Image (spheres, rainbow, N blue to C red):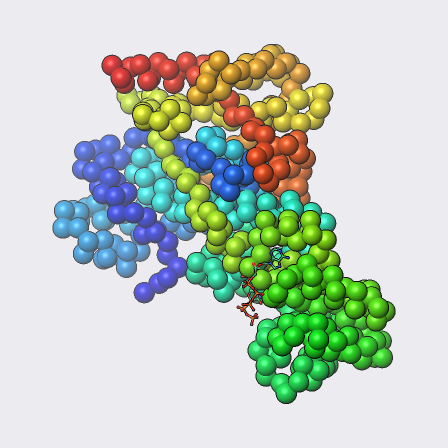
Length: 479
Ligand SMILES: Nc1ncnc2c1ncn2[C@@H]1O[C@H](COP(=O)(O)OP(=O)(O)OP(=O)(O)O)[C@@H](O)[C@H]1O
Ligand SMILES: O=P(O)(O)OC[C@H]1O[C@H](OP(=O)(O)OP(=O)(O)O)[C@H](O)[C@@H]1O
Ligand SMILES: O=C(O)c1cccnc1
């Protein structure tokens, strides 16, 4: 059995719908789907889009092999052999547009747009959402952590607590995009080129007769990498003094110890006292790393309390997005081919926030030329042309009485072509480029929109035409 083929990483209902389209002869009809989420996680004011690289790899390697076909045969008696046969030559032949990874994104705007044969478009829903929901969630969590410790070192330590191996490595990557500096996971480092870092565990200290011996042996083995975990027995009475002795030993060999790590207790008190002890010993260059179930709220509080911590090791709460472990991204049909033309479709809900916005759409970030800041995102129908300089009206999609006119702006198209006619046309940027791009993205927004608590809402707006289409379809379907 191969663990690597993700083609059946889909919900059975997708294959059922593909089969039903195949039966009724509509499998080649075009369909347009959009990926978007409705609500920002963690009460944050923005999200950080991630997951595209995985989506690209997935789309490129979609294949129903012998194993997949044989398995499907056992799962549904109705599936005719000719259908299974058709799957053998299945390839993604459609168009996929997406916002680049690292883009700051908001609710209800298309992050990925898929235009493909309905046969193909159905299959990929589950995997696309799986990748994008998780990675965007973790990048957003990492971004919040970064916001509270902008000048400090941030290490991703989550692998052991992650929801399995894929989450560990793709989560480490998402955290790096959003500003973490390194991961402890070597596979993530190898796969993606993320810098790696590591200290040592309590087991190293427990595995020796004394803390002094443990620290000395460790320092002898890795003299240029010495960060010592000082809380195994008693942080201030034995750990820090033993670390100081080890640092002095290193100094006598012309080396400098990197840091100590605190992993329990009151991190403010311990870090302040340890800082003083290190400074008094002439070791002001030795830094302090802290870990222990940290998240953005604890780090914010520790900093407010005056903790003297240079680097934060963050595991569980980051990699599992502990306070909100899923992003509710969805994949919705917005247009379908009928008689050779695309017609817009809508999904109506009693909850106005959940009514989808129909039609084949584009999304632009409207940047004020005066301030250089983003004024709002603007969703328009594909055929609408934005002529820079011509005033546009930004209408709130739910409350149409909320609008603003804007004239002096630049409009940046957020969706980039990734696949055209099934061919990859996008050069995947390397990770450091994505990270820099994310940093630039943050510069487009005001601090009020980026703050962690009760941020100012950034608006995603509809064009007048897109808004009218939505109203017309609501009235039509309500009949
Ligand atoms: N000064 C502080 N203010 C707020 N939170 C803190 C402070 N110091 C530590 N914390 C956090 O409080 C929690 C304390 O964890 P816990 O109750 O498990 O204690 P511990 O000292 O880690 O004990 P253990 O030895 O079991 O690991 C951790 O999430 C830690 O990051
Ligand atoms: O607390 P997190 O944010 O999840 O960060 C990762 C944790 O993993 C390690 O603890 P663990 O008890 O697993 O092993 P150890 O013996 O190395 O401390 C490390 O010491 C951190 O406390
Ligand atoms: O290197 C470390 O200190 C580390 C790595 C993983 C988890 N906790 C700590």
